[in-house]
Amino acid sequence: MQRLAVSPVWSIVLRCRPRRGRVVEGGWNVAWNGVERPTRVNTAHLSDDHAVVIGASLAGLLAARVLSETVRRVTILDRDVLPTEPVHRKGVPQSRHTHGLLARGFEIFEELLPGLGADLVERGALIEDLQKDVIWYNDGFQVRRAPSCLTVLLVSRPMLESYVRTRIGALSQVTILPETEAVGLEERSGRITGVRIAGPDGSTTLNTRIVVDATGRSNRGPAWLSELGYATVAEDIVRANLVYVSREYRRVPGAQDFTGIIHSHYPENPIGSGTFATDGNRWLVTMLGMNDDVPAAVPDDFEEFAARLAGDELHRLVTTAEPITEPNRFRIGPSVRRRYERCARLPEGFIALGDSLCCFNPAYGQGMTTAAMSAIWLRTCLTSGMNGLTRRYFKGVTSIIDVPWAITVGNDLRFPEVAGTRTARINILNRYLPRLHRAATIDTVVGETFLKVANFLIPPQRLIAPGMLWRVWRNRKARATAAAQPATRVRA
Image (tube, rainbow, N blue to C red; front, side):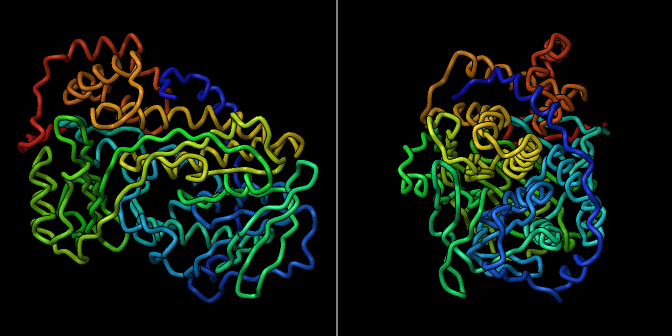
């Protein structure tokens, strides 16, 4: 499971680049302003040409978007009351913490929902150059800042989710049912035939050909399959034992020459941070630690924790900016990969996407982008018809998940207290990466190549291409930045 030689994923991704998305006309601005709420469906009129998405998460919404191109009716279920405004909701407790939509993810969101970036900028989001505008510390080494092609969207999770939900809900083929829980699946002759639901109007069954489990970390997909007589789904689990604490601060645009600060955690200093400017002229600051060495969810103590990170930018920011929330604590569950592709038998029409398929250590910011890549693969599978959809989807999505899973697991296994098998390949790569990060303090090409890999724009093999090995060796004596001491910023 810790394999890092994952070149097949890139041939799949290249074959599955999305078609140009259709522009959605009218309606969604009205819903965005809170005038229109999601509608309820009359189950008596549902046809067999119908798909049900369980979970109105971003993963579920993207799945509904691609299904709407092929299936006549799509129904999205969610247990939550779904607000019309961009606010936190019970079903997304992680929304109070920093989220990263990687460059590849931004491309896909824009492809599926044309105009998303511009619309969100109007609402206060920012589109930035990830290498020029964000300060990166990897293993205590600061990536040299320089203009790059790495364009990212800085936006809060509630704003992004609310916008996407409103756009998807405005599609004529899509109906959203809030406060509605899926309680089980139905099948006949090895094919999904329905979803049993319970909601404000009582219990019923929705007839459907396709079910997408997008219910997140706490999903019940494997339990539902077990109730139908299918074998237990194998899981790979890695426990990194992380705790996040986040706080929001008032941002004065232009007061800093950066819009983000990232500190990766590493064995010599197993704490980190993710800080971004976001909508509402706010800074969203998240700091993390492992086991018992975690940020305090107490004002002043939270700010002082930043002094232990490389550079002085974050400590200076949190001790001078005006706080606008209290610190908010969140314990991260394990990384879990559900191996549906290894199941000898699955009901035709069953799909899992997002955290229901694989939930990552969020310190690496891969979740939303991987869900978007999986949705694009689902779209490709749908264009080939319904026959064999489930098997084709899980076979192909495995290669897509391989890359972020290998990155997550490989880095987590750098920490001796994290249980797992450390292969020779992982050990060699983990000895090489600190040397690469040191070289990136001087060489902008090294830094940009690393960030492109981390953002799923180029394959991981590019990190060990001959030209990169030469650059890393040439800059092997670059001056180190001590993780616990202020760093001198290297300007492009």
